[in-house]
Image 1 (spheres, rainbow, N blue to C red):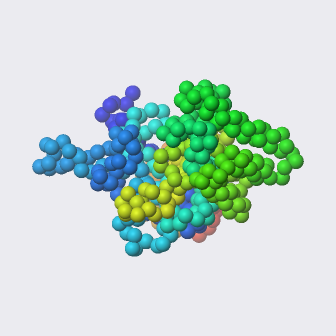
Image 2: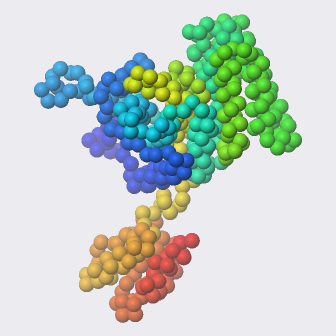
Image 3: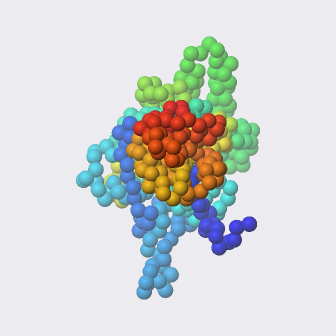
Amino acid sequence: MPSPKTQPARGMRDFLPADVRKREYVINVIKEVYERYGFEPLETPAVENIETLMGKYGEEGNQLIFKILKRGEHEKTGEADLALRYDLTVPLARVVAQYQNELPKFFKRYQIQPVWRADRPARGRFREFYQCDVDVLGSRSMVVEAELIAAAGDALIALGFKDFTIRVNHRQVLIALGDRAGIRRDHIEPALTTIDKIDKIGVEGVEEELRARIGAASASTLIGFFRELQSLSQAAEIAADELTDKAGALNAAILGRLVEFVGNHEGGAGGVDELRTILELSEATSAARRIRLDPSLARGLSYYTGSIIEINVADLAGSLGGGGRYDNLVGMFLGKDVPACGFSLGLERIIVVMTEREMFPAALVSSPADVMITIWNEESVSESIALANELRSKGLRVDVYPEADKLQKQFKYAASRSIPFVAIVGEDERLKGEVAIKDMRNGEQQNVARANAANAVQIRSR
């Protein structure tokens, strides 16, 4: 068992080479997709002024901020003036307020950095973890939502995900549902948070909780609405063979029912119109068939001002990411509201799921190099280093065994690292201008002209 002296701090993790390669692979794929959509990279400091963070996450969030005590002569005061970054959204809002005259009118940024929360560590919950955010600031157009949904969907497709659903809802629609059910405004948020549990505890379980929270009459009205939506979904499943666009037909039916239930409720009707616009604009994107309107989706109600988005994968509890519109946050720093909408992919969760499903390229996970160069004897060390340099210049990942050891020991080492090829330059090979290439996967060995060594490895790697 490891000594407590060698273990990382509680809730923190060491990332060994295979872990780092996985994370970098996922980050690079996501970056490539986001940059195709015109998003620019942003990085902010790990440490923020404490007043920047306090009061932005609610009372519970305040307690989870890692505070940094004043230093030097002020240390004895026990006061904190700095804090570790809690998320990437508040720093973004600060940056927009600070550099408002230098940033474009429509600021599209992605940011992939670690954040810290003084949470109680548990399985899958850490005090340091990466967030992967993408946001657009400066526009209230639903084009923003459509682009964010498409970008997040394309990123998951590029990583190899096929079975995900993009759930979409709207804060104003949720408020309208509560109003129409006769729920007091101060009870709407907890009631709709209960509704969000339908997938976990079923309609009956939700109805029981609602009766205790908001009374039998309001609970019955609200649950009646969601029972109707379940019936619509079941009807779509039954008619799946006849429908060329099941998702589109179901979304249209849900929209129709929302229009009836919300009626002329000012905020709710506007929210329904915005949902309809998001669906229409998304028709031209790769995400069109994956979007599902879900009036039960109620994440972060106190945070979002408009659209609410979440991505779920089949047979997986929880989500792979979420986001929505938050038009009020930047105003906390700027003194005026700036339209904003964003989405965050759960980088850690994506890596866990991809590992469990064996979605990573085999060579990425198993091998640190494409080829290992052996050292024949002490006199040939320079020759081996020169060959490594030649192969690296052709784009190969090359490791050099650092000692003149028995060849069998060098082969054994390459096998233990899952390096697929070993290159040998012995005395005979040097005289002939050749390199011996040993395929560690099947034991075959072949001599090739030194100039063709890189090509030989690349061909056999396919």
